[in-house]
Image 1 (cartoon, rainbow, N blue to C red):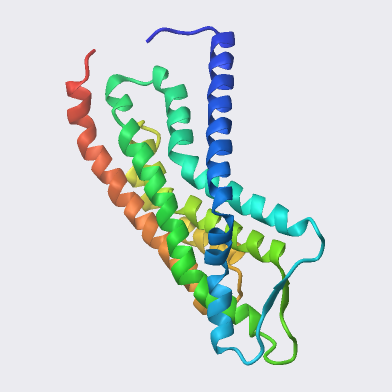
Image 2 (image 1 turned 90 degrees about the vertical axis):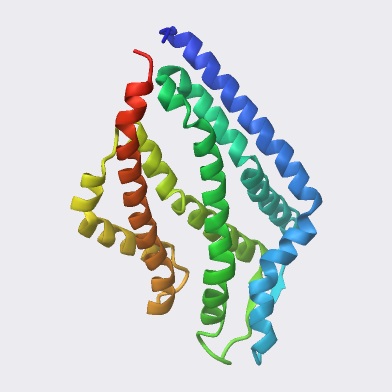
Length: 250
């Protein structure tokens, strides 16, 4: 491995950041052309609530710029999701020169795994969590109030929740990568499982849009499952490590 000077590292980092921003901007433009379809899809949990509610919830705009800003924010989220594999590749390409040959072979599995995990987390939030959370929140006061929701706030909360769940679902992929790099062990995860449970439940309570036990469980239980999957993947990485180390050139 050649040791590059600091300025060369900084220049490469700048170029990687520029390419990542360009990819995000291009994918945001693509998503913006489908802004109506995306907004309609994100509105479906609210439509499902209205289908059975006696008092319908309405999305409203509070100023003339809110429709455009909301569409742009949603498109930016969609663009980030579409550009995520390329952005992850840029991160990997930046750190790859400092890795050994057997560590560089993790690039493709890591990039694909990161993209799949993020998508899986967002899909889980959309189809499982939001259908429970939206009716609970809007029906909390029964028929006392008529829900009139700012479209900007509604879309912002939904997108934030999808993004958070997408990031949290990266736990097994990141754990596997850290194990392959020798930075994490299954023994550490197993010995600290009680602390992990407390932290995961606390995290679930923070990001859960409701305070009831059902919705808290819908977030915390999958996180604990992901922690268990992380332990299994780390153990698998540890079993493969000696063989790969022997096969790597000195």
